[in-house]
Image 1 (cartoon, rainbow, N blue to C red):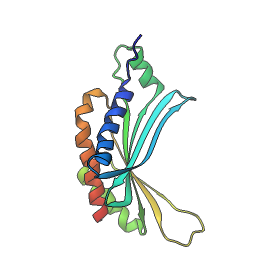
Image 2: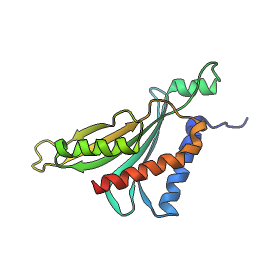
Image 3: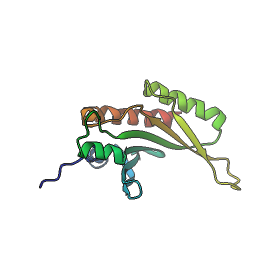
Amino acid sequence: MMFDPTVFDNLKVAFENQLYDLDNLDNEINIVSRYDRVEMATMSREFRLGFTMQDNTDITAEICLEASLKDLADEILEAPDTNPGCTLRVFFAMTVEDPQAECPVIESILNQIWTPPSRPKQTLQYEFDNQQAHYLNTAEVHFDRKINENQMEDIPSLIDHILDSLEALMTE
């Protein structure tokens, strides 16, 4: 019996190929993190690949691909009237000093590049009792629909949008 890769596996490999080429061959980005998890409690899958621009490591982008047990089961069991796919989210992590001033600018930049996104979600974190006034801002761009192999040809364009976002956020 031959192993038939899932939508999740195929999309994961496609993202890896594109991004590792940008790292190893083009020297445009640096891969800084990689997570490939199977959550045994829920039998779900999660893949994350984080990277920075080669010339600026202050802002990190991360692609997050997720598939639930239902997504995987619908695909493997070929459940009728289903459209198996994966959830895709993109994160941008950066340090901000003045959230009231900087976060609206970050939101505006992401809204210009990711049209039409739902409003980017920004989450601020800081270390309690640390006298420095720096916050870690994680801005999330999420998509309202699942993706599958039909969107495989969109991956280069999606990565271009991520690179454009990194460039624009660096000049902010």
